[in-house]
Image (cartoon, rainbow, N blue to C red; front, side, top):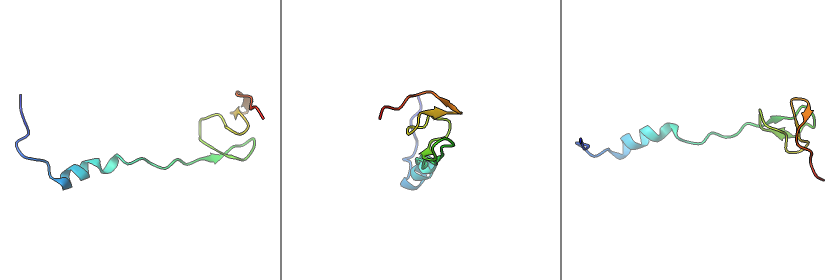
Length: 59
């Protein structure tokens, strides 16, 4: 089994990890209530997804 011949430098290690950062979420306005909601998810405020109420919200 092969082993690394040389130690990976800090620069090379960090360059490899440059694309691993978390990207910020970009909420869109819910078409039903106008509150910010994640795309392709049920709205947490009104419980509507694609024009149908899927999750009744308890008040």
